[in-house]
Length: 400
Image (cartoon, rainbow, N blue to C red; front, side, top):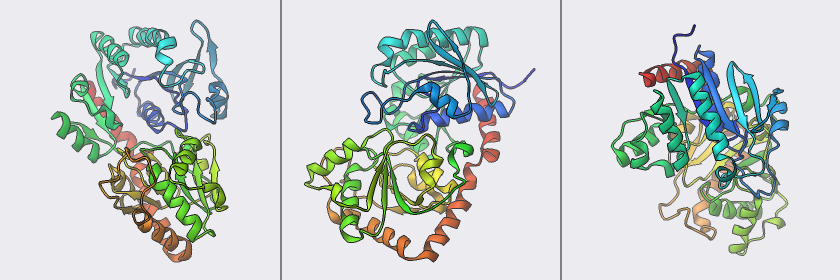
């Protein structure tokens, strides 16, 4: 019998949603702990981060599971999928077409019942949570009354709420930046740990670097910089191909933002727009350089994924992006006046440093090769062989 603490992950998201980096991180942690000899269970649902009404549609959970080599047992009342992967026992409640904002109304009770049932039968020492609605707090309260300690994954700026954080027993963050924010806001200590990655899902074996890549063109990701950057690149260097990939945010946001500034991106033949991918590795097969002009980013998982593929990330100086990129990426300052409240494209001067780096990477093969090697070297920080023992030690301490 294992002497490691028993860990139950409360995951009200689909564990195999490529658009949800946080859900992927939580699942990867669960699988790493199992590999370190921890008994681990996951109670999840099929809610997609894309949300209801996303242009690319909702995820078909059964097809997504099968695409990951999983043939689940389908149970009823409520409908749910059961399977074991990497030693982790998964139970996924089917929430149908419901999105992030409305799944609780129709399926919240069923999810809570399955979670409480798992707590009663599994007797976890810790419950690992990363969402923080009123219902989530009630679920955490049930777990605590049953003797479990609550470990909270602090991955979003909206969760920097002292009242919320003080209800947790232990707080885990994805970088030192978030740990510093947590302390400043709440006075509470937290533990920074590098973003966990499933390298099988992240690393592309068929690299053909062509495009400068932008993922998830939403407001928090620097939408108003992306619009101006794409337009100016199309005018100045129509020979440089730019690929914009939907994730949580669809192309509707991009085109609407462009129209607000009187910009027609459709006229630029060097700009390609793609729907969401099934796994992160598909992003990087055609990627030469990653562009992340994010305005609100606690860590920036996509930057870490780029490093694994030898794709140099050019990132903003916001949040934990510079920390995640490390020695393998380049950091560009964005004026403090540029915030997510901005609803028109930024001035050309703001994106000039980005354009200069893009041109350098396109025109100087030796420069690209140098930074690709640096990206590969920097990726070792995220390798499972290094992170799994660290996460195991963290959860042993948390259970105490």
